[in-house]
Amino acid sequence: MPICKKAITGNDISVNISQQTACGLIDANPVFSEVDRVSGKPERTNNYTKSAQVKKGRQARVNVKESETLETTIEFEVNENMVGYLENAFYNDFTTFFDYTATATIDIDNTANTITDSANGFTGLEAGQWVFVSDADSAEIDAKSFYIESKTNDGEIVVTAGQLAAIETGITGTFKATMLRTGDKTKYLTIQRRVKNLNAVADDTDFETQIDALVGSLSLTVPASGILTGSLALTAASIASEKLKITGQTDTAYVQKEVLSSCDAVDTSIWIDFSKTDAGFTTFSMELNNNVQTIQQAGLCTPGAIAAGTLTAGGDLGSIAFEENPLREVYKYNEGERFAITIPLKTPEGNSIYLTVRKALYTEATIPDGDEVIETSGTYDAEEDLYQTTVQLDMNFSHE
Image (tube, rainbow, N blue to C red):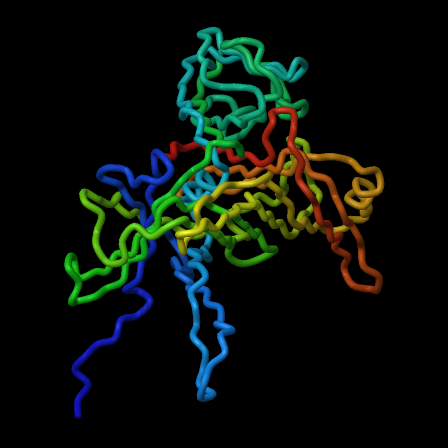
């Protein structure tokens, strides 16, 4: 007998997210964005306990429902679309995109470590962020990034020492920047699992919608070779709909972005304390945990409240022990030195993404014995820095 019915596949399932303006309420006419993922989707778990009631006739006792948990874990490969995940995980908003082209008004001074603009065009820049320069008629700044140590005024920024190598005047160039820092602006999300169903009420799709979801944790891994990967864990407070679309909902146009490979997308030298190094770092990972908690309330199966606790962040950092300074990272550990780590990424689309752990401390740093090529293995923990933040993202393109 021929098989005439087709089973669905994983390609018939999608996960879509929309930001909420307020807790407890889906926005009117919500706009959803599809999540790039390798695996994972919203899961609804019913938690039961077995009744202890004495039974006659030896038959099985009743299972009694205690609660429901609404959890989502997404595994993904890193591409430009991940910046949306970071915005939700960082509990903050991007700064206004800075895009300024100066015409022969830029001067640079490697003695004072300054970039000045006689037209006072640096209004949108601030201390502590990266600025990316392109289309400049000076090789000293063209196609380079600069960390802003301080801002004198709207016409002058002071960059990290050693980033400028000359004194030049009358330079033309384009400056771009936008920044995202971990903060305390809770990002409530509506998360929707869509499954193909030819008997569905609308669009041949079942729409299970969970609301008041918070990003509990985010992880990113930059391996020595291969594809950059990450994961995103969310916890929701309640179910808004099991099958039906939300009235007025629409989707953003999905744009496919290419994934990042360690050999192509990562600079051979990362930045330590905002200065480029030749340390030969091999691997990097970061786990950011918002410590999301839920509280059960009598009369409800789903949680009665959801909130984020104190942020924690940390991970691993590996580096080659070059003979010029093989114990560099071990000395940081021995001396309890705090340092900033910046991972510079270049996307296949030609854009820059810099991820910075602003204040890290090694909790472990060791080198192995034996006759193999030695790699220092370090584990770090992150702390709040002078800007009252922990992790920062800088880019040369706008996130909308």
